[in-house]
Image (cartoon, rainbow, N blue to C red):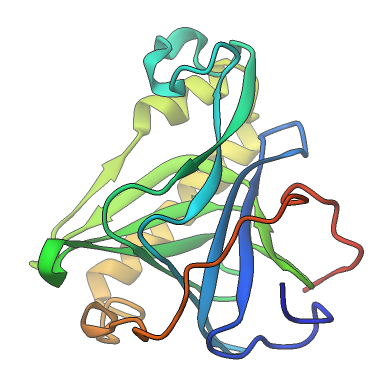
Length: 221
């Protein structure tokens, strides 16, 4: 992975890791190698290419987390597995300090489908990428500027399972309201034309390193 210090900005084409820690555990359970599109004080944009080998959480017997009934989805024993990202690639956009990132999805033939607002802990930069913690609640946004909440059932269950206390849950809801205000105003990044972006065809798919779950030697803002 490139980038020697968390205070430095990565160059377009650099490979970094976009990771999520398990809620309440601190251990990395999602890891996605991505290619840097843009990295400035205002915005980090990265591309996850189709077929990228990633790490994802699964139940202890290897079945999908979403096959587990909601009531026990966050208490059943889990492990991780390496798997290829299926479907089209994903462009991820994140502004420093903002408690969400915005993902862009396309259908085949680059027909733009939607934006996805992933509510999460503001990302921590380190030399090899960024780390965060998912906050369960999400928002889908469509080209006609309509939007809807996603995963409200999982957000509620996470609270019942003790993964998120009332104060944190209220903060996540407030972050969601601020994101909705941004959508209704059609502010950045929705107004920035990223749906017309295309990856450099010369970029190779990043590899998942053996030490994908390593503890960062240095973290920074």
